[in-house]
Amino acid sequence: MIKVNPLPLGACAHELEGAGYQPTPSLRHLIEIRDRTCAFPGCRSPATRCDKDHTVPYHTGGRTCWCNIAPLCRFHHKVKQADGWELAQPEPGVLIWTTPSGWTYRVTPYARPR
Image 1 (cartoon, rainbow, N blue to C red):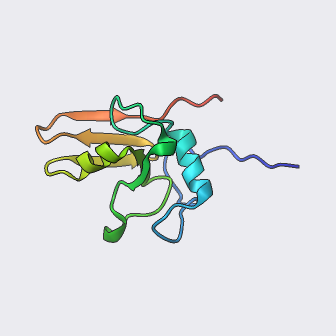
Image 2: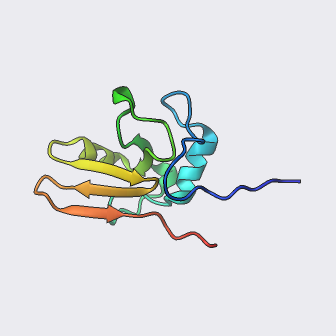
């Protein structure tokens, strides 16, 4: 028998958190299911080919968790690190990008069947 658990929604209890910098294969897979493409607005690079980026950097205390990792293609990973850009993930898979000029863009995960 195979047990299937629903993916968590809303606030994160960190039950999927990994111990180190690299996400576990199962966490990486769940992120690729949640976010099928790069998490930059309008980018369609497949999540399976993207870096798994810590929204809050790991070296500054960011968790290797469902609520702090999103797929970013290499180009948009570099954009995130450029001067003036900001990225927040207020809940798992919901990203708010702020450009150097102050524009904000909200990116949400694909709708899941219920």
